[in-house]
Amino acid sequence: MDDKAAVAADTLELLMMNQTAIRAALEEISLWVSQRGSTQIHENVMTALQTLDTNAQSISQGIARLRSEQS
Image (tube, rainbow, N blue to C red):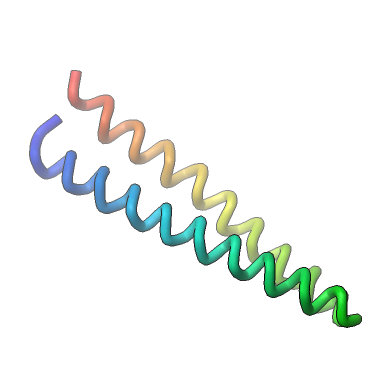
């Protein structure tokens, strides 16, 4: 893997870790809101989090492709 691909893969991996942390925090807040009766808000947040999950899969695949260029 050349230096540019390695930097791109490392940067994407850090962004993905941030995305995962933000997702976990939002889900925790959403559950707290749901327990207080705002189930519609919880459902909306969970729908939005599905987008993060979908994008995380694509990001993971991109990172794997960048790292596989090493061989």
